[in-house]
Image 1 (cartoon, rainbow, N blue to C red):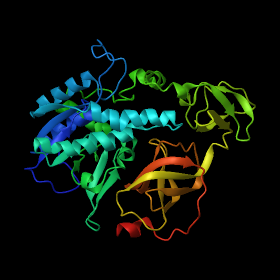
Image 2: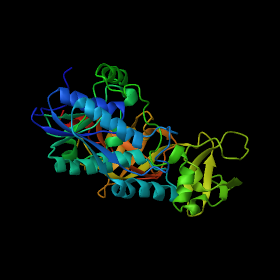
Image 3: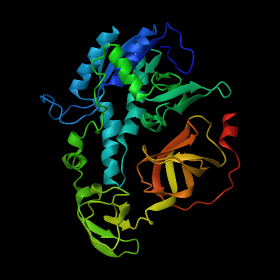
Image 4: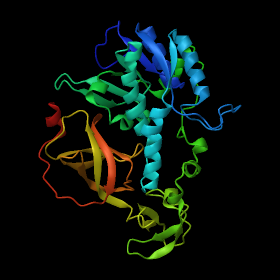
Length: 391
C-alpha cells in the first residue's frame, strides 16, 4: 500500500518511530520500513511498575515491561534498530506531578493529553537528533497535512472517527508538527489489525490500552494517597448552590464534575456534581438542568491551523475526548486565555480538561479549561474560520 504522509518526505529521510508495543505503533514501523525509509525504534520507559515481575497483566496500559518486549519484537520484524529511552524523570515532571496537583486543586486532570504533547512528542522530537533522525513517527490516528495556501501544518481528524486522537495533540507547535509523521490517519482500526496480521506482527490482536499507565489497576485514589495528597480526601459538606447542606463527602478528589452515582445522598430527583471547591472543601451538586452551562474560560492556548486570532471567531469546540463538538463563539485575550460561549448549553464542563477548537476536520487550536460558567464581555463574531485559514 502507498503511505499518505501529508507532505513529500524523501525516501532517504531517517525516521524515529515511537514504539509502545501496541499494534498501531508496531504497524507504523513496518509500513515505513517497507516504504523504504530508514527507521530507528524507540520505546519510552516512563515509570517503574510496582509489580514489574507480575506473571500476568492485571490491567492494560501502554507502558508496561511486557509492552517494551512487544515493541522489541515488532522492531525485529521490521528489521530496524531498537532502543529503550529512560524518561522517568521527565514523565514525573510533565505528567505525574500535574496530575497530583490538579486533583488537589479540585480539577479533573487529563494526563494523556499532557503525555502526548509534552513527553511522547515534545521530548521525543528533541531526542530524535540523538539518532540522527529528522522526523518522528507515531501510531496516532490523526492526519498531519501541509496547507499549501497558508504554508502551515494542519492537524486533522483521522478517517476512523471512533479512533481519532486529534483532541490529544492540540498542544503541538508548528515546528513539531512539521517533523511529525502519522501513517495511520487514513486507515481504520480494522484495517490496521488486518494489515498487522498479514505482515506477521504478533500483536495484531493485542487489546488497546485503557488505563492510566502509572495508576495501578485504575485506582487513582490509592495512588494519590501514596503520593501524600491526604488533604484532598478530607471529609466535607455536599451542598446545593444556595448553600443547603445535603450530606457529607469523602474528599473532593473522590468526585468529578458531572458525576451522578456514588454521592451517598438522597433527594427527590437525580443530582450531579456541579463544582468542587478545595478552599471551602465542599462538593456542589445540582439537578440535571443545572449541570448544563454555556460558557467557559480556558488558559494556555495553542493555535495550530491559524495564527493567534486578534478578534473573535466561531468554531466547533470539544470539551472531552468522547464528547460531540458544539458550535461556540471564541473571544481571545492577550494572555493566552480565551472566553468560550456555546450556542447551546453543554453538560459537565470540567476544569482541568482540554477544550479543542475545530473547523470541520481541522484542529484550529485548544487550551485547558480553567473555569466553567464565567461571564465575559460579549462581542460580535467578525471573521469566519475559512477566512482565517485563507481558503
